[in-house]
Length: 389
Image (cartoon, rainbow, N blue to C red; front, side, top):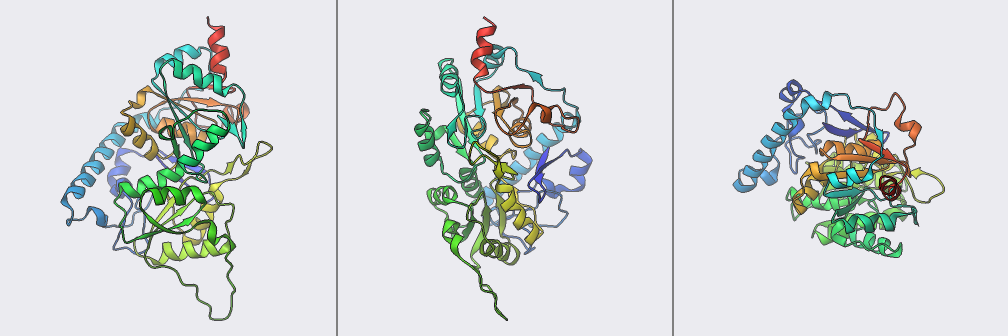
């Protein structure tokens, strides 16, 4: 199952048959670092465009070329093998009644943060006790967020401020995922990244040794339109990364658009396509999908999404910690990101109703994404545990 977004910020899930994959082999190619087609940065999605092998996997580098083709072949085999299960209709989600059974069935819990651990800057009740209980049972805890405004180190400080003891190595934000992805495809050292986003992305790119420009400092820049005015841009930009940005403006839209449309092989990367986010606990706020949607509209291109529900972070986590995906439970409050992320990765899934998704939304006949279980909040692990003793 491949995930892509539309320009409204809503994630659409495409189930592809083997025949479709054979007809469109470009669906399984990695994004292009350099392409003979100047206006193509990502050959995934539903594009039929013909592309060349990424420059970093060219014959000049036989080792990485070999890795690329082994990855491409194995990914295709895994996708073909799971085609039948993608078409299967999932049973309706069941309310969580036996917490112990779920806890004992997995080794690792991956938690979303916004709407699961906290709302805005307020900790959701019962979280510290729940996490302590899971750790006492020897469970590995990992925290994954699509929010790209902070780096892992900055998120570590937020956990600490809320009274939670979480190691930096247990935190994976979409800001880190963007930098990790660029590193994984050997992003050229002589290329730069234009950032539409906040400080978290800049810090993770800097940590990865990747050159960048843009970010919050472009938030105050304006364009004075005059007859004959032409906006210049850096032709060495090889990727545009778009994340949630409270300083989003027309200058950034135009600069990013020029890089994507005019720089040959420029990647268009989104940290996430979330329609809304929790900046405060009082209401929902427009999410990163709104910024990504603006670039979709101006470039007529779809981005590569590195955050949930893309499996990039899941694969990264499984490889880093040596975790079997069947031994993971993904816990989140969003159906189209958190739950789909877990399902795409072959994990057990638990929806909590403490964030975006309500019970009526889950049970709406038009909703096709069904988690294995649902409950009100993660502290139900404690009460349901006590009820079964």
